[in-house]
Image (cartoon, rainbow over all chains, first blue to last red; front, side):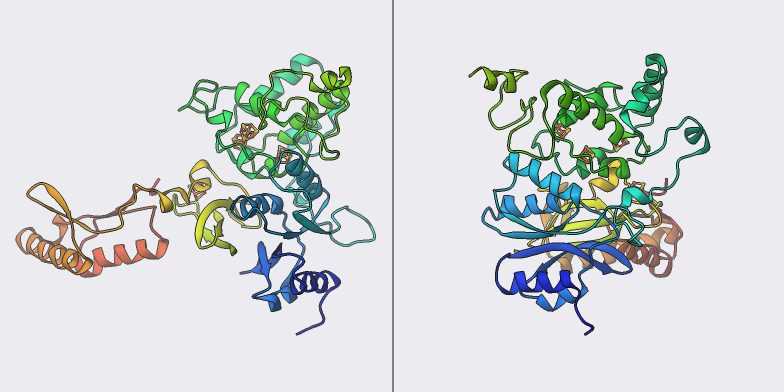
Length: 277
Length: 135
Ligand code: SF4
Ligand code: SF4
Ligand code: SF4
Ligand code: SF4
């Protein structure tokens, strides 16, 4: 066996020392970089651990393990987006404090590093018309806000009517974990036709992502209709930040609109209520 | 505690999207798009996202059922095979192989579907084969 990389050695050690029960990372399977769960029983496999180049929500798998084994100690490789997601999942009680230990991996693009391990950076270029209109991936909220509102409205309605209601945006999202999802609630959103009720389908989800979306872009990666979902949720997060000074993905408090949490409250401004106490 | 990720191909239509099954303790708990698959580039339609659903469905048939005098009764596989073979032989002898049609299913593997069409063509002798995913 060839020499192990520092990360492989560290994972080997964590499993051997029983610091974690299971370690989530990647391994090349049939030519594809796929998520892989490393264990003490098969510790020799750590020699095949890779950290990229594909990107899956390992923390979502961790919540599935934790819901079946509440005391499991889980390790995983984590990019910045994974770290932010882990923070939100802890704040929402989907993972216990200290339950997940991470090995940080680089995802930031740099001249000093040949490969940036982020699928979002490798997206196929958008079509000619979108390029001309400046509708490129990673578009800044401020650039869109600068456009006339009629133009923005037309664009969003155009984007939304492409939706094939696959629910992929919700399914792939690390911070979507509700047992009953509003998007499938017949009284909120009409069922049985395509496109779904627009813009309500997308705006319901956008409201839920306010103060919750950690801007990983996995939803946009997974959207077969190539709707700029990340941009939409960046906008709602910007509103939450401006109005409530709430930073999503760091800190220890629930977001201002936490009416979906374990203790439902219809008060729209819990932060202000806290301040008055 | 055992978690596995098993790559496969969606069987619900002819597109053939790459999927990844999430398996926890031997139980299929979810389906994900395979991000590096050349066909679907990490995207799925609603059918692919729900590939795992029927596997653990309480409505799933786990035994062969034989309909006699209008009622279904559970039988073992040998009995089911014998009755089916006898009836098929009788129908083919009386009306010819093209009186038989074989309908296969997207809820089986590609390999099982292959075997079913082979059975129709080579054993029964008919081209009457169809599949719900022939969109
Ligand atoms: S970017 Fe999309 S997938 Fe990622 S947290 Fe936000 S809504 Fe969820
Ligand atoms: S946050 Fe909203 S969109 Fe996500 S699972 Fe919960 S109800 Fe569904
Ligand atoms: S992933 Fe895209 S197409 Fe699928 S439901 Fe979400 S917005 Fe619609
Ligand atoms: S049914 Fe949907 S997910 Fe499955 S192969 Fe066809 S397009 Fe892909």
